[in-house]
Image 1: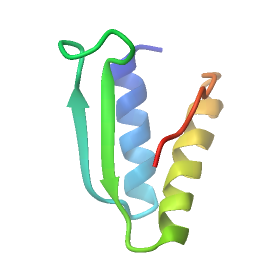
Image 2 (image 1 turned 90 degrees about the vertical axis):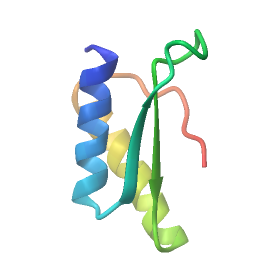
Image 3 (image 1 turned 120 degrees about the vertical axis):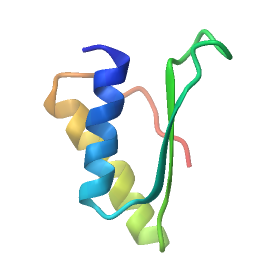
Image 4 (image 1 turned 90 degrees about the horizontal axis):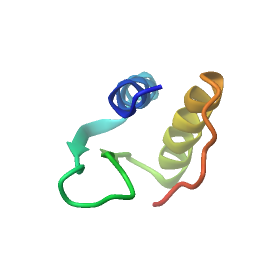
Length: 71
């Protein structure tokens, strides 16, 4: 799966869980270790954990291996 397709999938998963201020940044020119960074806001610690889990579940559903989560 291409990084832009995966980013779109992740952004959709974040919208489903009511993530706020979702920004998908193309960082291909800044680093070699990633193509995209997604920044999202949540209203509580519990919601942020649910947002992260939603993205993990969506990625695993496509067969992608999740290497790590920050934040």
